[in-house]
Length: 121
Image (cartoon, rainbow, N blue to C red; front, side, top):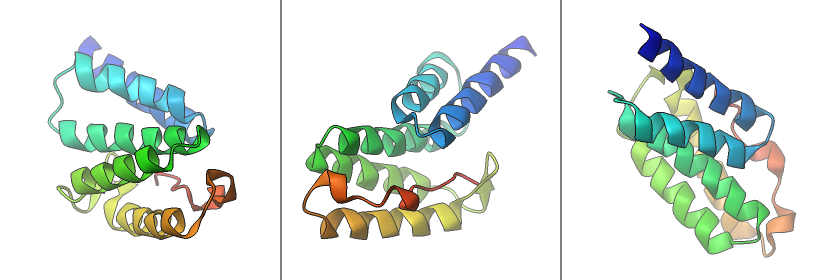
């Protein structure tokens, strides 16, 4: 029971950081969850890590890294359907598609419209 509470806290900590646009800390929380605990939806959590790291790369000016991690996260999320951990996957995949187009359209990472970042709802 304590194990489940720890896992849920790490997941929710990641959500909180992510929604506060602190993508590095979101990645850290989810990485701890992913690496330290057994998860039935391991690939889903890995997708969240990759999505948040995509935005870390973008913040650091690394467009190649941002695009690669966005693609990898999409591949992980496509393994699931419906609602996973309270997140609507159809909506999330649609938003990731929009971000991919936006990544392809911008010349500089500073030109990215951060309003495109999914809320994870």
